[in-house]
Amino acid sequence: MSRPPHVDTDADAEANADAGSDAGAPPTATAPPDPSSIDTSRRPFVLIWEVTQACDLACDHCRADATPARHPDELTTAEGKRLLDQAREFGPGQLVVLSGGDPLARSDLAELVKYGTDLGLRMTLTPSGTSSLTPETVADLVDAGVRRMALSLDGATAASHDAFRGEDGSFDQTVAAARAAREAGLPLQINTTVCAQTVDELPALCDLVADLGAVLWSVFFLVPVGRGRVLDPISPERAERVMEWLTEVSEDAPFGVKTTEAPHYRRVAIQRRRDASDAPPTDGIGRRLGITAGDGFAFVSHTGDLFPSGFLPATAGNVRDGGLVERYRESDLFRSLRDRDALGGKCGACEFRHVCGGSRSRAYAHTGDPLASDPLCAYVPDGYDGPMPATRSAGD
Image (tube, rainbow, N blue to C red; front, side):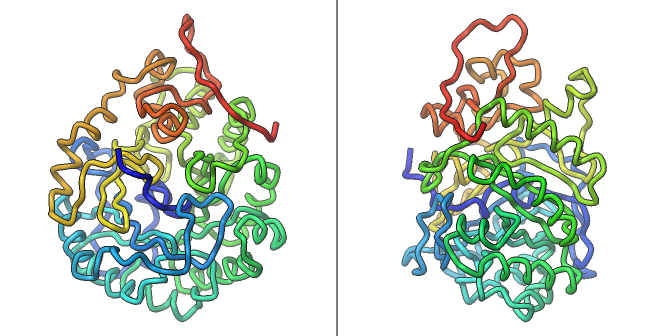
């Protein structure tokens, strides 16, 4: 096992895992593949590349312990282009998310976006809400071919968001960037972290997401890694109530709703239909169900290490020497994570394991075993009398 990759919530692998609206895409861009046609044992639905760890923010939940300085061993422009060449080998329309840190810390960002777009990749971006994210910058990225931008809002007011992000003015800069994206015709995603410090703001944040015209709200349930270790997660019971509320929101909201590192949201939605066999193939805006770390999802760190997720610090090797596609398909680590029947504890006994699978990242963070039970899930399968995962929570 390697040391954890240094990422913050903005870089989570599912932050842009969406094949929905492509409004604003360049006319020559490759169309997204049919989600139902993707064999996740052969290609990820979404590939995250953490282009840098550098960031001017000091967010409470950051796994990066990010600093303003770029790491001297980051992938170079040429190495980044070779990585994008490898990503194209997965097949037409591969979704690539450029994350960080703050991707805008790299002066070659627009060049990388254009290179990936010219290869037929669907290039998306998760920048930080700083003064660097100007309307002019947004316009330049649109011209380069970026297909979607994801911004983080963890509080519904400047006071709460800026306190969480560790930077005065971050809220106003993020909202201004969101409006600039809308004016440029760039589809917008909003990411929100759920923990004890933020959970009560979710209803107000929901209203703000709608007001900003976002196409997707990605609600991230805290995984205790990096600086996030000092934050308090909510309890499994509170998480269940939040997910029940999110399913209600999704029925009427003008945007899509997804969870990140909480795949049991799928189980909650299915239970509303009362039968696991009623599970739909997608979530209504084009995303496949059942995507988890290593299974439809892959993450390349700023130095080229390949991980199942930015939150699961076990590596399948480094892509500087090639082998991205082979490692995703054939490495023991990724293959084990795709075997839902190999899960332990109550996740392994759960009838919803093939549409959920639990957060492998959270299981690893709590136990060191990525195949253990997800401690955030409150559901206990009928007849299960085995060990229960330990939890640490607040905010009930």
